[in-house]
Image (tube, rainbow, N blue to C red; front, side):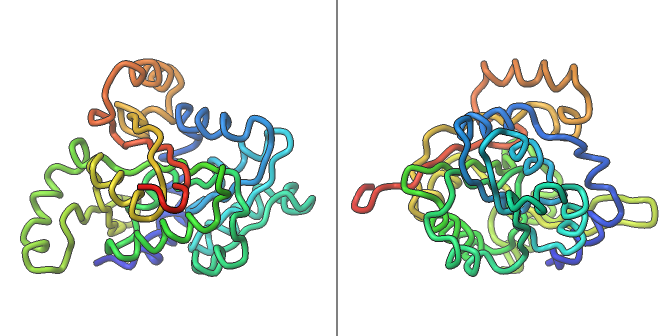
Length: 261
């Protein structure tokens, strides 16, 4: 199993992440803005260098907490968004999500787990721990927006290669290992790929009620955020296809009231 903290240190510090994903996914950002149209507080879990944090802070009346385990990402964000940290509208954090949840109970109108952040957490128990921590942070009338990699579309060869490791118990069903290539070598990476049923089940177990599941894009994230015209056409096409055809699954969920199923 790769050390994901170390892998992301390399990924961010090399500049490869920002080169691959220079701007937000327009479809995902539109969903986020809709839930903060009147202002409010948000928490961006796995915020990276601020691809979604920045445009949300540019809305009127918003403030947020950006959380990332990678010190290099936090440093880059602090430099990039220093005008927001100076005026108190942004706090950047890196400790365990349970600590953040204890400090900010029911504090946020919107929580984000964008572009597969949840899928980069090894082991189902740890992913559930993250979802439950986020549930404790979100207001009872708040919203969670997350995207997860679609097992029907992503890493077909890697899924086949992972099968013996899954049989041996080194990986769990849905896990894959892959690499990102940079100029001076490769970066080992981990992903847990989701089916629609699985992400809905996990959210329900964590105390959320799923509102919608749709495709985040049909083309790769790199294509839709790196090129304006393909991104616009892809966004249009996503309105007419089922979620199961998406490159990622884009999910909107809300806290489930106590005692409901």
